[in-house]
Image (tube, rainbow, N blue to C red; front, side, top):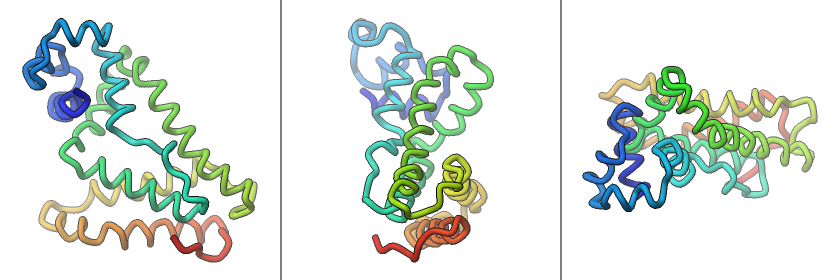
Length: 186
């Protein structure tokens, strides 16, 4: 169900994200959907939790490994068949207060989980306590997002082929910028 829901949302956004459309796409009756989810806001939130970013699952024991894993998650969702969901999420949150309210728990949890990666590294002594977790996350997430958004379609296959190199280089540049200890191997 979540695969059908994220695909529908990625294609149509909030305006096309209805139980009727999801029932057609998934082959599950509307009555079954209504038994499981009280409303489509709850369905969207649970879909994001199940099929979008999950930084809480990342803990390699090293900041570099964690950031590379996070960058890989971002690359995967932003280049998948569901990539349109990122655009719709930003637009729909601005246009529909009910979407902003419904997805806020997921968005806030994802941000907390990403920042927790940095806080664990500070606790381990990998980086100084003065490092701003939000800023570090913005550099990694923003770097990946911008790279994907600005790569022309004709270069997309090459970008995908160099994803691992790009993410490692980006993470290493960010870590150098925040004065991380010597490069950790993943």
